Image (cartoon, rainbow, N blue to C red; front, side, top):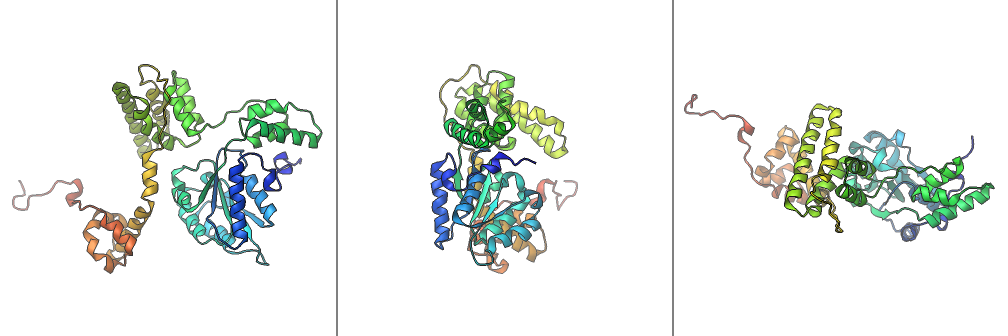
Length: 394
């Protein structure tokens, strides 16, 4: 079986990686600090597919003379396998004590939300250089990892650089090809360009678009199909993309009536989303998408031609900013629940009543602070009809 050219002609050192020079320089300094005995935060390389994230990590290992341990996503599908496989890899060096580069590839797709806490624990204990890669760094399940890593962005490769790589490979393989056309069709995806060169294909391909561009396309769309296509091409999952749309409706639609119609459409989409979650009836998903994308786009009376600076969803920012306090509150309720012999959910409902019992429950300062921030909210009856103690017939 012929070797893939993406492997055969992969860069062997960082200087052979095309594009993203600032990111490459940062990664080299990071590696040199490790080599000097100065442990660094793990790297989280993020960006569109085919921009060199994995190739850079492998080239770094070769350049530094480090052994490489690379994750196999299919074998890391639960928390136990993460602890069993990844933790030893990040805590042990080679037989003679050399560095090992641990590469966890495509973590946004390989790991589910339930595995992330185990991965976070492994990351906290790592004493080897660790590199993670992701296409969608803003995936909500990665919020904890984002805070624990140094984020390094990889942008699409310029057409000139793609063309240079293709020309070099074509000469090495003694073939003739229209490298300019292949580079144009690749749209910044170098890996796809090399695959097209090897297969002889020059067909254009559907590419995921930056979320800002996808949001702009939805709001500027003048047809049902344009708005729906914009949602398909967004480089984030649909739930997160809906948050982007929600945040930016009042930013884009300055007319009050347009704003109201768009928010009304989004509220209808949310109704369908709730029914899907409750009933697991995914045939309703098409209606959720239609209201989120096409109905929001159709809410405007006339197109808005002005430039709009779209905002990052405040909900996601809030989750990031409160991650530590929410984790402390969760820990506090679990400790209290184990002593009170009830669920942490039940404790959380009334946790504000236990503010002065922190010592008894063994809460640390962060946990006491998180509990102290909770308001006293009565939960009598939890929505049930209360009886009149003096007169049952009331």
